[in-house]
Amino acid sequence: MSKARQAVLKNLRSSLQRDALSSDATAQLESRFTQHTVHEQPDLSHLDLLERFTEKLTALAGTIESVDSLVDVPTAIEAFLKPHDLVSAAVVDKRLIDLPWATGFEVSCRGAQGADKISISLAFAGIAETGTITLLSCAENPVTMNFLPDIHIVVLHKQDLLLHIEQVWAKVREAGAMPRTVNFITGPSRTADIEQTIQLGAHGPRFFHVIVVP
Image (cartoon, rainbow, N blue to C red; front, side, top):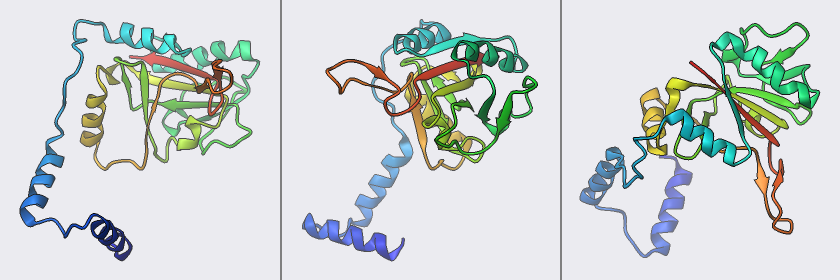
């Protein structure tokens, strides 16, 4: 433990008028942390995962489509972007860079910048209960890709579609070291701060599109 952290914890204990935890209390807390107890959940086991995910995502202004194969993703993206008249360039998750992108469609693997209009990410998981996408920060998909571009497109493998959020945390632990950030995204950015009127794109993308692949 760093000296700075020790100093912070010492100040907290002092303000709470409490000494350091006993070895028994520390052991109890560590045991609790490793149990990862799942509390009460709604019973949604009878629902089709993709149908539930689609219902919840589209209810919050997100859009979704399914394709037959990963190699069909570039064609689907081109069709989605045409109405926006933005089909020339995107920042792309490095794990998707080798897909058959159309000639003239420029793809870059880097963190998104303010001028970027489109980002294309690979999802870690989807949550059917709420229509939420989970993205982990990593070198392949810098976290700026999730928030800076106006249009955020996410590729989701159907096998990574889970029912509840608790299953996502189990999947994260199974994957190994905890990432620096875990982002849960449900539809495009929105706010109702101005006269209680929903405005999309206030704090992030105005368009959020999910492409489901086998």
